[in-house]
Image (cartoon, rainbow, N blue to C red; front, side):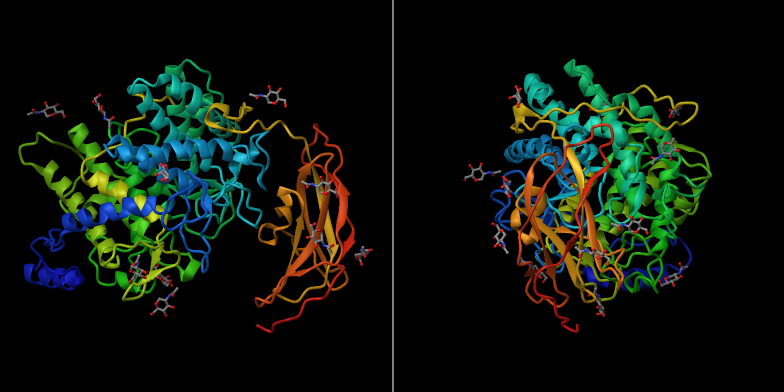
Length: 625
Ligand SMILES: *[C@@H]1O[C@H](CO)[C@@H](O)[C@H](O)[C@H]1NC(C)=O
Ligand SMILES: *[C@@H]1O[C@H](CO)[C@@H](O)[C@H](O)[C@H]1NC(C)=O
Ligand SMILES: *[C@@H]1O[C@H](CO)[C@@H](O)[C@H](O)[C@H]1NC(C)=O
Ligand SMILES: *[C@@H]1O[C@H](CO)[C@@H](O)[C@H](O)[C@H]1NC(C)=O
Ligand SMILES: *[C@@H]1O[C@H](CO)[C@@H](O)[C@H](O)[C@H]1NC(C)=O
Ligand SMILES: *[C@@H]1O[C@H](CO)[C@@H](O)[C@H](O)[C@H]1NC(C)=O
Ligand SMILES: *[C@@H]1O[C@H](CO)[C@@H](O)[C@H](O)[C@H]1NC(C)=O
Ligand SMILES: *[C@@H]1O[C@H](CO)[C@@H](O)[C@H](O)[C@H]1NC(C)=O
Ligand SMILES: *[C@@H]1O[C@H](CO)[C@@H](O)[C@H](O)[C@H]1NC(C)=O
Ligand SMILES: *[C@@H]1O[C@H](CO)[C@@H](O)[C@H](O)[C@H]1NC(C)=O
Ligand SMILES: *[C@@H]1O[C@H](CO)[C@@H](O)[C@H](O)[C@H]1NC(C)=O
Ligand SMILES: *[C@@H]1O[C@H](CO)[C@@H](O)[C@H](O)[C@H]1NC(C)=O
């Protein structure tokens, strides 16, 4: 076995000695089997280390909460994100079903934690009566609300959580515990499906929390959740509010196609190309080994999906952008980031995306093998020709005498393995997976360390390579797309999941109060609102509500925000300033009181009161940084 680090040098040398005979058939010097055998248990343990209450790296996290990363500074990821949690739990449920029985306690803890979390009021809204609070992307690790500025709402969380819990429910049913699935788990799923049915046709932030619009990844997860939610509801003999939206959701999903690839974000103004890991990650999270490549859910083996995959991967075959991808031939995997315009941490490759590319290809292979056939059409031809130059538009059958079907499968498999080899090359010897690795050699790990999602992504990739597939979810009867897509929504039904431990919250009537304070600040200095209720951070300035400076002028140094508060309650509040160079927080020298006005149920978004405050306390000082 050759040392991996020399792989590309070896591959290139081998290529020239092979001359032009078959550039697609590079020798595979890398022992991907050995790497995966060593790394998979590290990755599984890596997820568990970040889950409360016993996770070794996340002291303080409550039971069942998945922490995104133990990193508390540069960046601070010590929170529980709805998306990362749900994808991690799906991986754990799949591992559990595949035989890791010790994981059941984590799943049970998570069920309880999510039942409680659903009821927590947060800056995206309340649970009752509208369900809007379910769109919150991020909470503190003890399950309390996070008030900081964020891209919210994000509408993939409820769909992904439903998918994970539906998979678990189906296992319970298959194992004689239907009544538990019905009474304990279904109420949580039902709230999430209600949210999907009500809000799928509203904009929200994408999985990278940057773009407000419609996101392919989100729409795809929403479709899956509604379809398998419907099947589960029928099995349990319960009503699914929202599931009837599935045909419209999948109709809408087709509209992301631009003729060459699925554009990641639509209904938004952006100068990006829309080639984004979004679409690839969406398809692997809705993968069904038994589904048809023509399914409108857009499975990994889908022609348009493959064309999108190629467009996305090729966008990173650019040595000016990613120097570590220089000189890698077209039939070999490369390091992949989120999208080429990315500037976060200067824009670098991510482990979960590079591993995700391998998973995508293993998924497609599994589907062709199940179907014993593989159809190449005009849309997917370019993808195949990169790795199998002899590819033509036709259906290759596994029983073809000249064995082309298996040659193509082998080429795709080698291509998939070469992405794993890239992950291997940039994984430290101890197997620790951060969020990113540097696009410039030597490709050191970057950003949050021990990222839970990186580990979960490695586990699911390893499952697929080992021929381990999550349970099927698409009904065998083909979905009929509506003749015309229509905007739609159905009002959700939201009830706390009592049997799983949700508290008995009641429909709180909230009113918006616009807080406005004149406060002169230095450039870089910010003003926050803090008060004695949980929505105002319970006087904990780390959980204060940020105010906006968008109307600030020298004539009127205005900081403001409209905040939903419980109607009728009396609050104590005050302002605090965070200076620009890590100087200590400065608080006002007065406490203010306000009675939140009665709500107007006919216009819940209306601002019912406005303050007119002036900062009372010491001024800030410029740190000159
Ligand atoms: C956490 O530790 C407690 C005490 O040892 C144990 O009862 C519980 O099962 C553990 N939870 C998990 C998820 O392992
Ligand atoms: C709502 O659905 C319609 C029909 O598919 C679509 O044209 C529109 O862009 C969608 N809007 C959002 C925000 O999802
Ligand atoms: C390659 O990346 C560089 C640096 O980001 C960029 O300026 C250039 O346009 C990219 N080339 C292509 C073909 O996209
Ligand atoms: C990546 O590595 C390069 C070269 O060593 C370095 O200049 C750059 O700062 C690193 N990027 C980050 C985000 O640390
Ligand atoms: C090969 O499989 C196809 C279906 O995929 C079938 O139509 C055909 O008859 C089979 N040919 C042979 C030689 O078995
Ligand atoms: C693993 O290795 C990386 C890179 O050398 C290092 O930063 C990290 O602290 C190590 N983790 C552990 C748990 O030893
Ligand atoms: C795929 O379908 C077959 C035949 O119905 C079934 O036996 C198998 O369990 C399904 N695969 C999965 C992963 O559910
Ligand atoms: C929840 O509280 C309301 C009144 O506050 C009460 O009517 C209802 O019975 C309670 N439900 C449960 C399940 O405890
Ligand atoms: C906040 O303070 C007011 C008194 O000004 C009090 O009436 C109210 O109960 C307090 N709220 C909480 C949640 O402590
Ligand atoms: C901020 O400015 C916008 C645009 O001028 C205006 O519509 C809005 O009412 C202002 N908000 C506040 C709180 O003054
Ligand atoms: C305002 O009330 C909080 C909570 O009681 C207290 O910690 C703080 O010192 C008070 N501030 C002033 C200026 O009285
Ligand atoms: C805040 O500034 C505006 C504009 O100068 C002024 O009209 C208003 O009275 C000020 N508010 C307070 C409480 O001083």
